[in-house]
Every structure is written in C-alpha cells, then in structure tokens.
Image (tube, rainbow, N blue to C red):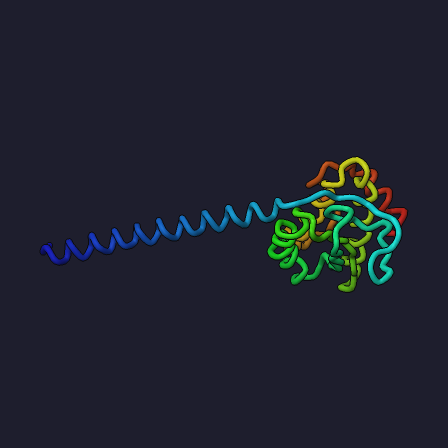
Length: 182
C-alpha cells in the first residue's frame, strides 16, 4: 500500500469520526431541548363563569395565573395530527414564554370532530379533569400530553390506555366515563 492511499484512508476515517461526533452532539442537544419542552407546565385550576366572548369556563381546565390580561382558548382534538404537533412543539413554548411569566392563561376546550374515538377522548378528558382537578391538577396535564404523544398508537382501548400514565384511580375515571355513555 502506498503512502497516498494510506493518507486517503486516514482522512476518510477521521472525516467519518468527525461527522459522527458533530451529528451525535447535534442530536443530543436537540433531544435535550425537546425533552425539556414536553415537561413544561404551569399552575392548573378550575374556574366558574364565563370568559371573553361569553365562553363558559366551568368544567374546563385552565393553566396559568388567575389574573392575566390575555386568555388563550385552546380548542383541540385528540385525534388531530396538527393538534398533536401544536401540543408538542408550540404549546410548550407558549407556556414557557407567556403562561409561566403571567401574561397569558390557557383554557383547554375539547372539540371532537373526527369520529367516535374523538368523542371518547373528549369525554375521557372531562372525566380525568373531574377526577384530578381538586387533588392533583397537574395529573391532567400529564394525561393530556400522554394522549397526544401516543396518538400514533392505534389500540382498541384508545385514550383509556393513557390513564395508566398518571396517578389517577382508573375505577373512578371509568365510572365517570360509563355515566357519560362512553
């Protein structure tokens, strides 16, 4: 083997190692950033009465401080891929930049329109909220995020499977679900 061939091989190996190192670093930083955004949250609570445009607040989860100048009505559908993308990519930034500092509060409103599973998910949403809103409202946010993260999984149990991801008694949520006809 001549010197020029050996030199070319060394350069190829070093170039490959440099590419792997840089690529791995970029992947690692990206993963850390995306992991931290999915865990973003703020105070969750219930309210009564109506908000802007006479939209009923009773029974809807609200994230943020009570006395903020702006209400963001988050109409979502658990089966909608665009809602899932918003929930995982954009909503954490809104929470971090506007909700946590106290400029905005988010009112979660389900808008089921993509079939039977959508209605099941919307009813489950309300049942989970009723179950946890006084004792552990952050559990709602965990369930809400888990349903969107598992959207690609098509199982017969649908959103019911995600109850196991939070600290909620399944029997209570199932009982409320049955009372609501789901």
